[in-house]
Image (cartoon, rainbow, N blue to C red):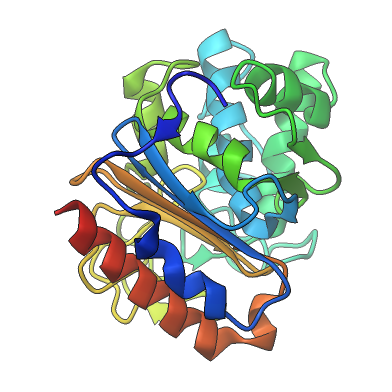
Length: 283
């Protein structure tokens, strides 16, 4: 790992001990606090990230914005929709269909299609296939050597805890883009919109940034009861989760290879408990 990624001296990986008893084939986790990291499990094991991929795709799109290849206000998707709408689940697409099911900016409809349209737009404008764009723009400069986009930009990244620690550090302290642009992932877009988070429930409002969910006042939530409303991140249908709480300059990454819907209730209990333990440990 890079020099910026080192074992923490203020935290113990005992905070992560609960992952040892999770009912999954493999589990690995890490806490990023400032520039210090503690981890547990095989952090070089490659997992399918599922929807955590959306945050990586969004970051690539923001790099394209700074490069001048695209603008968040570019028309993308149905009439009246923009790249911003697609990345914030406000374009009106259904979950995994090419058709819209509601008007633009009417409701937060969680959609793989919107993210895929955003990625296609970047590829079209840059002239670079999106998997190559992500590799060149993010994976190579961050030394995420065990990460690859294998299929959909919405759910097709495979990676490791080690590599996601590097990405979390980039989200927390951007180097590839300006801090102002990077803040868009946690800046609520179309704040009035309500909607459903698959596997969790319906919320009104349902705040979302560019590619990342923002916790806000949602309760119950998949993060801990003690995470701040400004916590942002994503969980994935493959049994993965990553959040960043900027009020404590801390990220938590926990990856498994058991699909969320096979242990959904247990997963939510496990993630909430672990999140609260991490918050307590850094405070």
